[in-house]
Image (cartoon, rainbow, N blue to C red; front, top):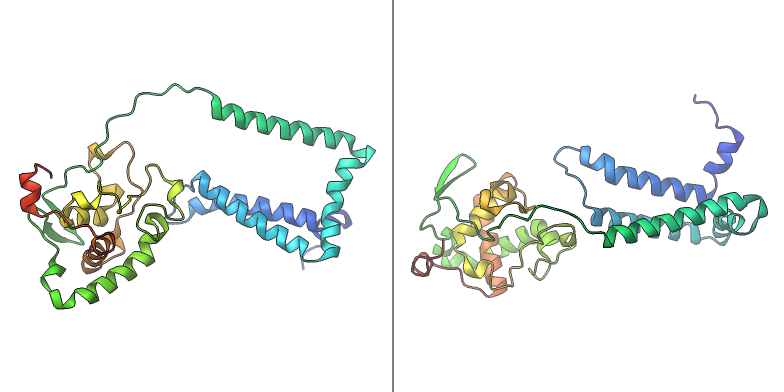
Length: 269
């Protein structure tokens, strides 16, 4: 059996205020330091960290305020810090710390930075003529969406593409396919806005297939320095699922994919 906590620690552990502080600290540590260590994870963007912390804070406040007795106990340390003479040093320290933090944040927003000029980035870099998809060689040049050859089955493919989109693409590209999903603000550049006539409306479906299948890691050099955060969807989706979600994108936005004849006559790649 573990040794019992000392009376002082037991008092703090059972107090709603210190419970709330411990939960907030634990949540921050988990999001900032533990989550990036998980397999397949990456550093959590600051905007996403802020969203998680606000969510945790709201949950903590709901918990401590659902009972009048708990809410009263929760406010005790705050009231004591603000009014009791014996805590004058603590009060002064908190006031100084808050002022310093606000000042540092304001300074960080207005200070000038010296940085090298960015490299020119191609929004739609030229695709390769051929790619390998799960060990299968696919020639992109002249390739059309094979699902369009089965007109009778298009409703089925569109329904499948809709499911693929809402299960995988919605958080970034949004419910309206406008690049304003829940996580969009955490990325630079923002996820593609498929409603804009400068994205899929200018592309062949084989180009879109390449970008979805290979994601950000598959971008060529001219696609940097702001690589797309999109993962390699060939690791998660089948070839048919990618083609079906491409059908869904064009169907929902009302755009028509560029044909190879138009792309060649217009000089686009």
